[in-house]
Image (cartoon, rainbow, N blue to C red):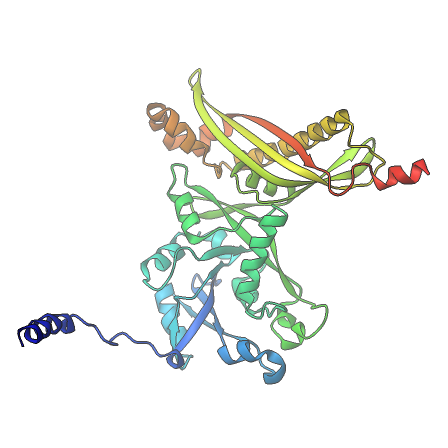
Length: 403
């Protein structure tokens, strides 16, 4: 009896602390938001576009239901909270943002006002995750981008996320950035950062129709497009191609890419595929001026050769490595020059100087982006190595010539 009494006295206080299901949320009462887009209207208001998942259509496929896997709702207001509440009046369920994995900012809004207000509103909401990916539209609006239906990936937000991820891994001309990454960049000593760019290719009207994804070759689609350069939270320029990849090199975010080099007058004769790379950035003061060193080491393999070449020859390998080093160095310098012309230290060179010379940094900090960064001397050193040659050494063209 004493044991039972002791057990009861132990269990009763525990029961008092059990919360039960007071905060339950039934799935049938929720409108799960996959992506959010924000644009700025001509009269200065905000237009919020919500991409909401249709669970039955995603699970069963669009063939049987003949309806899209997502539904788009838009509303306009003076701020994001008002806009969100305006949108909720059009939906029969409670908006649920915890699964939103993409935030799209319209180019007009990013240029004229910046992204800081949007980030502040998102960071205050307990349902939002700051690990959510952020992109800025390139030559289109956030609404048009979110309305686009995509094949293969039924939910368009997933298409954007996967395209950014695989593009960075395979090509290196884009950079997947989260809201947290953008916040860190804007809160850094120089207040500049980069954001992924995305665009709609084709007619926005056709892109939102179900017919668009029922064709083997869709007329309208989405693709990654450049890297947006932000200064003080505002979009100041776009970086494309080699300059964009140079930015990714300096930020040590290259996961994989392909470099084409010329050989004896033939353009893009050899394809060099990176296997691994590492970039280190250091800085110090020299004669009262900031001095930054960028050192990149890359290892790769020969992916393709369009010239008769025997790469068992050590001198040939050495020449290929030198050409790769020259190409990477050129891209890095192009990226640095573009950042200097925009007076936006997106690489964090200011933080490197701050860590090495704190006292000097305090004097330079107020004018770093506008005065010291554009004049900062940057030395670029690249080491490239060929580690593999695929399943053959001699070029197939060499074999044909020998015959």
